[in-house]
Image (tube, rainbow, N blue to C red; front, side, top):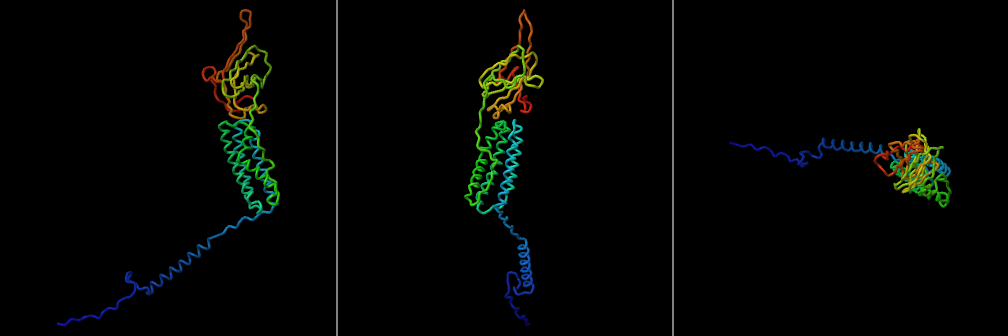
Length: 326
């Protein structure tokens, strides 16, 4: 019996792991296709890259005009709380002022002349800090730590934002950068927090009275106060009572009266309010005064109140500043 042996098969010297030769037509086409795709992707990405042009440097004349416009805006911001006579008015005014100062910073969002680049950055930082200061003072008005314009203006004038803006103003005006610029004409000078007081017993409001009634007042609180005797919504008598002091309102006509009082620090006679740490309260129970003849004599009513009492007839409740009679 014979055995037939076949011829040996040629060995493929290509890529043994994949089973394909690198020189195979299909593999070459795949590599070419991948190369074309990579080029297409790279071309697409490069077409989407854009470079923002730097803002044009403004001329000294244009820069001065921008400074002038921003100064007007900052002055308007101060006006929002310059006449505030209550914490509520102060809070609203400070909110508006902070927003307006932001507008001033937006007006100066420009590329200034090269010689004032550093000062311009300080100016923008000062405006941003002023907006922060105003927001913080708004919180103090909310808590009635600040109550009216005089103390608010003094606080703003000594804040870090206003201090920085005054410094920039002087640097711009000095001309040491090569050109002198005018800015900040309306910025307030530093002002002290005042503590104005009246003498105990001094009448602030006093309508004509010819009665026989008397009101004895004891202010045992830690702040000065103004007590108001009110009839038909109008103050008949308002009297100043220093902390820890007593006084008497006399010649009160017969009738029933509401009693209000406000306390705090720094009495402003024009605004008729304390400008810091203010409280506004009303006694829950009215006081009445009568005069009558008894056994050939005339007997009149004497009422006594203590501002520190919290119970009984002297119980009192907080009221909004706007409802306080003035």
